[in-house]
Image (cartoon, rainbow, N blue to C red; front, top):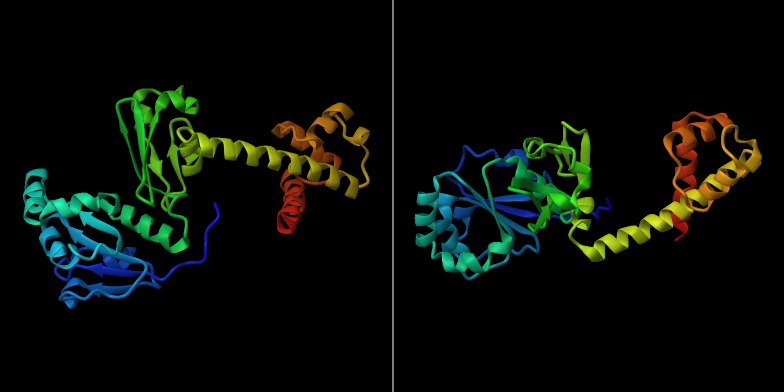
Amino acid sequence: MTANTSIEMTVIVPDRLTEHPYKEIVPSNSAMWGLNRFSGELPTSDNLFVFTSATGLPEITRVFQRHEVFKVLFVWIDSDLKVMLQRLEQAEWQWLLYSMDKVFFYSNIAEPKRILAAWEMGAREQLIANATVIEDRLLVTDCALQTWEIPFQQLPILANLSPENRAEFEIDEDGSYLYWPSGDIHMDMEALRAKVDPELRDRLRAERAIYDQKFGEAVAAVRKAHHLKETDIPGISSRQIRCIEKGEHPKLETLRKLSQAHGLTVNEYLQEIAANVSQWRSIN
């Protein structure tokens, strides 16, 4: 995951919700303001985030109905559905409807914490905000608030899990991946998106092909740096060495044989390979 330089953020919170642990989830370099401070004029900020509750939506409307300047409106679900719908009507919810792509309802503070951290790092499209299973589909919302609907039939890695186990996953603390303990399976946002985004899938395949090629070139470079010939690797034929050095990805056992031939542990060998690939990336 590539993250940009962290951004400065302004976060507005309702003054009366003192029991909500805002300070625990708002990034330390952010300016945090109470809602009652604003009587109509909002702070100048390119990155404005607003917290409210379902019962506090009318109060938010008073300030923001004509100022759709926020990046995300976080709505804490502090009431049942009937009460929330009543409050939406009082908040003239038609305005809210037009802004739904920027509204995030939550009951777990870990979710807005992930979203704020992702925006701060410039990685909102790469990190997961939340996820749920509905029938035969996995719904994943990234920290840019875009929801991706992925049929399980497009996730063959989960094919051996029962429907119950498919629904039992964990979200990494910062949203880097989903984890299914019953299968010891990890999937990040990019891998999930690639299942339903053909353009991304094609780009990842192209990047993987380029990486495999550079990985193979790095294998050749490290071998030559250790003054080894193609025939000097016990247990691996020279033909197999040529295939690897042209981009065929080696299995773990093959990596063990390569590292032993170089007088290195697998970790040390991969570090030398990574350094060689990184050198190529820095040039390009």
